[in-house]
Length: 370
Figure 1 (tube, rainbow, N blue to C red):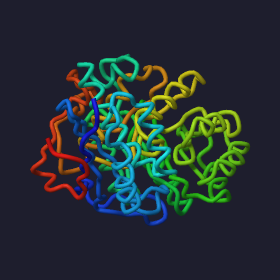
Figure 2 (spheres, helix red, strand yellow):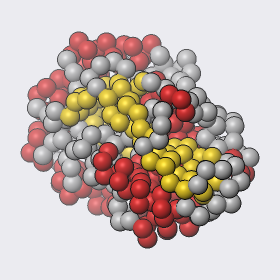
Figure 3 (cartoon, helix red, strand yellow):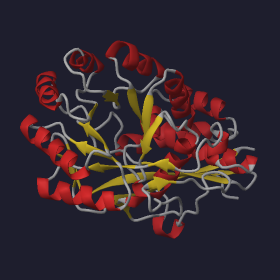
């Protein structure tokens, strides 16, 4: 089997509840998602999605990943998509970095691999370990009233893991965390996520005021070194995210920083091939993790579901189903159950049907038509 055609589509993925705010004024109504379609000489097609979150969240950004996909498309034409390890090496030989672009090609190849094996991707990723799994939602930076409303809405949906965005003025951040704790109650897991927005001084001030509260701190500072220094001064559990890209980073997160958890985003680390390796390493290290991504819609939701369903229940804190709070939905796929949990498709591959008409014409088309 060979890849004969690579097509790239784009569409805007909007937050269903208005502006979505993170630290340092990173506010957006929508982000532009890149959707990859791989076609093969056997007639199988693989789909996947990556959605860079603006230009200042990670090194990846829309224009850069779009350009990278042009380079990668030329490199992977003629490759067997079922051999994901060789495909990963081919992409590395073609381009340094551009993990989001590599990741979306990789995940489309896993979709084909699952279809070829007549198995869901979750089975190929190591085997399904749970029939359903907990989901989490993110409460963006907003007013206290809007935050209370968001928490109440999600509690009614069965959600019990809430990530609250912080990383700006410490007093406002601490007040927002307290609002979420009060609204959510003692049965919820609360994660205060700064997305690297605090400098060390602000992180120290925030941690001192949050110490003793039932909350976890996620990526308080941008660098691993600053997070390690903060670790010396707080008893709060630490979760690392943006600064963990490789297995080496994961090892340093646990043994240099003292973080017991990591947020695994396939688009950040380079797709299923590398996310699976990081997940398995985290499980071996006794770490907990969330399965998440930078942004996205229905395809990203399906991708997260397969990685989550094949993770050990005692290591998985929760995963994100973007389809529950973004629009439009350009594919079928898993949705949240009434108890706030997620499930994965039993169909081969990702188990999705993409609405190609809604996507429109591809912005890039390399290879040959059948």
